[in-house]
Every structure is written in C-alpha cells, then in structure tokens.
Amino acid sequence: MHSHDHSHSHGTRAFAIVTLVNLAYTVLEAGYGFATNSLALISDALHNLGDVLGLALAWGAAVIARRAPTARHTYGWRRATLLSPLANAALLVAFSGALAWEAVRRFSEPPEIPGLPVIIVASIGIAVNLGSAWFMREGHSHDLNRRGAFLHLMADAAVSLAAVLAGVGIWWLGWSWLDPATALLVGIVVAVGAFALLRESFAAAMDAVPRAIDQAAVRKFIETRPGVSAVHHIHIWSLGAGEIAMTAHLVRPDSGDHDHFLDELNRELDRRFGINHPTLQVEHGRSCEHDLHDRAPHGH
Image 1 (tube, rainbow, N blue to C red):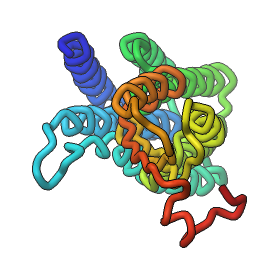
Image 2 (cartoon, one colour):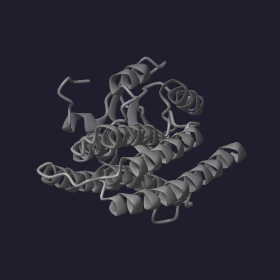
Image 3 (tube, rainbow, N blue to C red):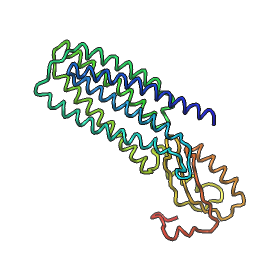
Image 4 (cartoon, one colour):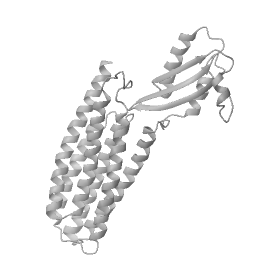
C-alpha cells in the first residue's frame, strides 16, 4: 500500500509544480498578448489557461479523491477525478467560441502587431509545455486525468509553435492577417479537443462501461468458470482514476468451494480486465427469480 501512496503523492506534487509553472507563464503570455494586441498570443494563452484549469482541477480532484470514505460517502470522493475533466471541457468549449468570434471580427482590419515579441514569448511557451509534459509522462497511460494533462501539454507545445510561426510571418513578411488566422485555428483546436474530452468524461460520469473493457468478454469469461450455469445483472463502471467496479449475479447450483471460487474469480477479473472492485452475488437455485421479471432480450 505504501508504494501506491507514494506514487499518489508524487502524482499530486507533479500536478502542483506543473500547474503553478504553467499558471505563471499563462499570466505572462496574456499580459504580452494584450500589450502587443496580438490575438495569436492571447489565443495561445487561452489554450494554456485551459490547461492550467485542467491541471488545477485534476490536481484538486487527485487530492479530493484521496479523502477517506465516510459513512455517507462510502466510496470516498473518487468520482471527483471523473467530474473534473467534465467541468474543464465545458469551460474550454465556451472560451474557444469567444476566441473564434473575436478572430473572425478582426479579419476585416487586422491591427499592426510587432512580430518579434510574439516569437520570443511563444518560444518560451514551447519550452514550458514540453518541460511540463515530460514531468507528467509517467503514469499517464492508465489514469484519465494524467493522460489528459499530458496530451494537453503536448498539444500546447504545438499551439505555441503555431504562434511562433505566425510571429515569423508577421515580422518577416508583414502578413498581419496571420494573427487572427492563427487565433481562429487555435480556437478550433481547443474546441475539438474539449468536445472529445466532454464526451468521454460525460460517459464516465454517467457510469458507462470503461472503454478499455469489453463487457461481452467479461460475461463470457464468468460463464466459463467452473460450476457457473448463468450470469446476469452485470454492471461495470468507473469509480475514479484507475478504479473499476463491477456487480453481477452468478448462478452456481453446486458450490461447495464458495470462498475459494470467489477469491480466484476476483483475482482473475483484476488480472485480465483490470476490474479491481468486483461485488458478486452467488445464487444456488437452478434459475434466479429476478430472471423471470426482467429477462434480457437474448435470454439466459
């Protein structure tokens, strides 16, 4: 348990550092964006702000999720890790709409923008984002929160690169329309990313079966266990980052090895599917009485 907890505290520390560094840079970039009137910088700052929000929410959720279960909140507050991406995505969709609106408005007469400050400030952004992404790279494969943070930071580096290129174009070629064009592009990128996140986190919040799990395969696996004659009422859902719960009713008419069977099954569910919080109800009857009321369409 100790190592698990250590990785948790390391995770929250990584979130804290990355969040604060990004926040400082976002403030700097937005300041320069408004000072030079550059929408490209402002849009990049917005993209970074989306990240800082995401990181702050994820960091907050990671802290809240460690709260011990209570009599009322028997799962603790693990669901926080599923709700924070949802809040973040909703905010980003709103912001990116406002940004695109301003960009379109500016196309008719783009203001004069000094290219060099844009290039310098956005270059710092690339460094900040790549450094932060490197920090978050560990453990991002199985935790939706950290994966979201890592992918955001990589996308941010790419967006800062776009701002650098716009700065080069403005400085070198005098194309002032590159500024709103970049901003519009960034707005679209933010909206698309946020929408995908919105969909995924909404599904998790609504107790959908996690994407990595094939419910039919789980059912089949349980049905083939020794002595099991039927399986029904299977529910699989996400409790929080990396924790998957499941409930099911199994019909096992002749079960003398009850506890041994359950221990073995729980071990296998975790090993094969990553389901680490199963709750199984074993019934001895030839058929389960619930079954008569709500027969599934394919029958049992």
